[in-house]
Image (tube, rainbow, N blue to C red; front, side):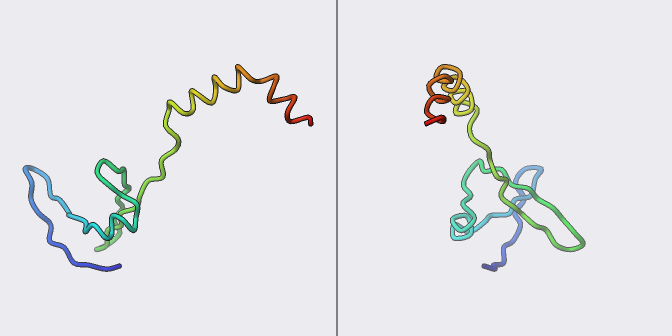
Length: 77
């Protein structure tokens, strides 16, 4: 997908508004983290892959500690 946009000054920054179709295609939304790189006269914006939420990781640790023996028994079957 290709489009043209005009940069807009907002306070001390400059914003680039991304069309909804591109946001949907890239699976981006408000507060999404992106990586911006530049080379010569080009700029590249790329979605940053997010890992699982910290709460999920903590839950997985508690779960495996609590059910460690049962999980090992299941793995041996």
